[in-house]
Image (cartoon, rainbow, N blue to C red):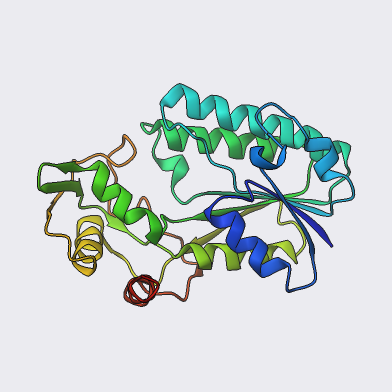
Length: 251
C-alpha cells in the first residue's frame, strides 16, 4: 500500500516512516525539502498519485495566532483537494487532545479549524488527537524560563512519547477510516510543573521549577482535566522514566 506522509521529515513523520516501511508499505515522505508544500500546493498532485492513505503530521513554523491559523487552513484545504483528486481512500491527521476546550489559544484554535475542514470535506478520514509529547517538555521549560526559574502551569498533563504516537498512526493506517476521532495519551497523569521538574533533574539542570495554575499554556489557562485523554483513549506504553533513561543512553 502506498502511504504518503505530509510532514514526513519531522519528528513524527520520520518515526512513522521507520515503522511503515518494514511492514511492507511503499512510503513517500513529503515535505518542502522534497518539493512538496501543502501550504502552496506545490507537488501535492504528483506526490499523491497512486496513494491509498495520506497521513498529515505537518506543523506550522510559526505559532503566532494569525500565522498558525493561515498555515493549517491553507495546508488542509490544499491537501483535501489533492486527496479527493487522487481518489485517496483514507486521510489520517494528527491533532491535539482538548484542542476544542481552549478557545483562548491561537494554536489550538488553528488545530480546531484544521479538524473542522477535514470533518466538512468529502474525504474518508481519521483524526488522532494526542496529548503533549515528552520531547517538548524541555522546550516548554525553556519558554517559561526567567533567569534561573522556570514558571509553568501546574495543570494536569498526560504526556506521551513521540514513538508511541507514530505507533498509533501506523496502526490507524492499516484500518478503515473512522470518519471521526480517536485519542492517545501517555501512561501517567501528573502536574506539568512536576513533569518538567523531573525532566530537568534527569538532565542535571539546576533551574528551579515553579508551578502556577494561572500560568498560560500555549496562551490559555488549563484545568485539571482539559488536556486529559478520554476513557476510551489508546494509552502509550512508554513511561517518562524509561524515555528519559533512553535519552540518557543515547547521549
